Amino acid sequence: MFDFDESYARESVALDATALDNEFVRYTGDFAFWGAKLASAKQMESLAKLAKDTTAAELDCTAREALAGDKKPTEGAIAAWVTRHPAMQDAEKACIAATFEVDRVRAVWEAMRAKRDMLVGLGAQQRAEMQHEPTLKAVEF
Image (cartoon, rainbow, N blue to C red; front, side, top):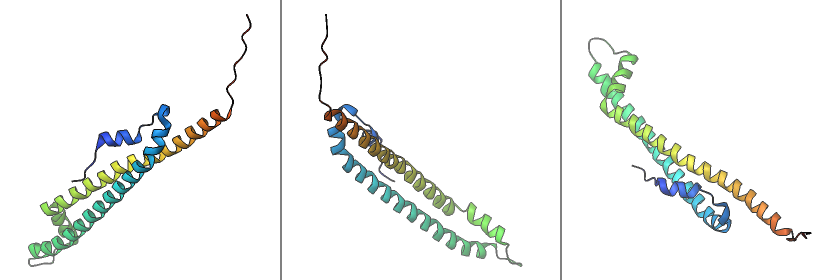
């Protein structure tokens, strides 16, 4: 099973506008971490799909033998036999789980990309505010 830390995910995508220096320092590491997690999840998904395809091919041969009789089995009967087989069901479930993990990690990674855009905007705003000299308005009594 894939290791996904929801509390770390929340921390990674949270943005504290009052501590931009800390946010800028932390961002690159978090973005790299979630990018690596996404790559790992995609790898697991690809391996699950490969295992499913291999299982389907093996079960196809087994189905043809199991359904062989006086006449050749139809492709539909073979496909139905393969689909109902417990090994194929397990392979399908593994693919569904792997796709879920990819989607979940991709959501955090996409949120990190949105955070980058927000940090750029907030940083620009902060620089613009720092360029203006503070002035005191005279108050008349």
